Image (cartoon, rainbow, N blue to C red; front, side, top):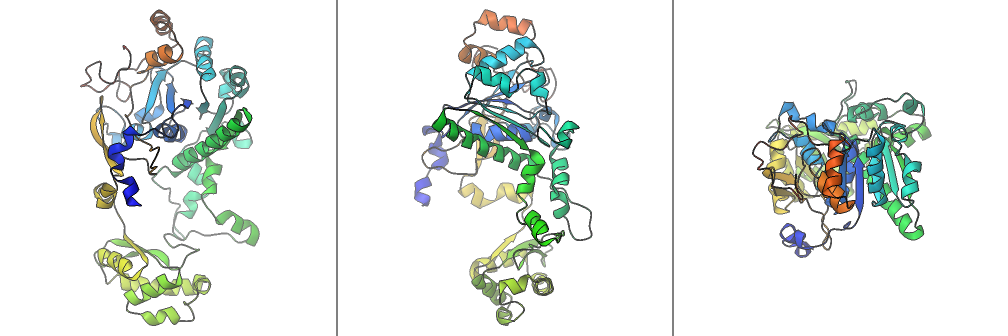
Length: 442
C-alpha cells in the first residue's frame, strides 16, 4: 500500500482538497475554538478567522516561555494555518451587518464565546438563520450554553476542563497530586469532536436542505475520551483510582525504568504477545503460570502487580533501545519514551513525510507537522501559516462581499473593520516588505 502514497507530499498540491468549496466563519479565540476550523482549513475549506480589532485572538500573546518566532506566537502559528484574517468589530450594528452578509454566503459559522454573547451581539442562531436557513451554526465553550455552570458564566480553559472532567485526577499516580496533561487534550479533542458534528450536519443538510444548531461543552467532550471509567463507576458502584502509567484494562501494560535511566513503554495483552515478552525476559515458564496465563486473571490486582514487578526488575537490567528491539523480535509492543528532541528528529516520521518544511511568504521556512491522515485522492495540506490581525480584510470584503474600495475605506474609517496593533503577535514580522503574502492591496 505504500506505493499508493509514493511522493505523497510532493504531489499533494496538484490534487484537490476534500472540503474545497466550503466556507467557514470562525469567531474563536484561544485553542479550543480555532482548533476545529483549522482541521477544516487543512482539508481545503475556506476559513475566515474573524478577530476583534486591533488585538485579535488572545492566543497571539500565549507563547512558550515568552518566546516569539519573528514576533509571532508558535502556538498561534501551529493552531491556525490556511486561514484568511479579518478584523471586524462585532460590538456594534454596522459590524454585525457585515457579519450577517458573510453568513449569508457561508456554510458554517463557529463560536467559542461565553453563553449569550452571540445573542447580545445580535448574531445568535435565530438571527443568522434568518439570513441563511441552511447555516451550520456551532457554539462551543467550557460548559455549554445552559445549566448551572453556563448560568454562572464561568470562564474555562484546557486545564479547567481537565480538572472538571476528572481527567487530571485519573492521569496521576496513586496517592499523588493530580497531574494535568501539558498537551491541550481538551482543546484539540474538543475541536475535533466539534468538526465531526459539523460534517454530520452537512450530510444532513445535503439530504434535507436544512441547517442546524450545534452546542457542545469542552469538559463533557473530554469525559468522552475516558472510556470505561464513567460506566464502571455507574454500573459497579466502585470508583476507578489513579494508576499512573499502568493500564487497568490491559495487563501487562506500563512504563518501566531501564538500565540507562531511560524509560520504555511495554504492553503484551494477547496470548502470543505475552509469550513473546516472557521469552524476551528469559522466563518462558511465566506464560503458563496460573496467575498469568489468562488475561482476565492477569488483570486481578494481586496478579497484575506481581507480573509488573517481574517486568520492572528485568527492565532495570536492560537498556531502553534493547527492550525496543526485543519487542520487534518477539512480537510485543515496546517503545523507548521520546522527548521533544526525539520527536522532531525521529526518522520514521521523516520517512513518512509527516514532518514538513513550510515556506511561507511572511515567515519564511519553518518545520511543521503535516495533517496526520493521508488521503490518496484528496489530500489535506498546509498552504500558509498565520497572518497579522485584519491582514485579509480587503480580500474578504471585495472578493466575497463585492464591496468597492471606497466602501472598504469607509468601513476602515468608521472602525467597523480594523488592522493590527503595533505589538508582538499582532503586526507583521519585522522583515516584511509590505507586499509578500498580500492578496489585495494593504
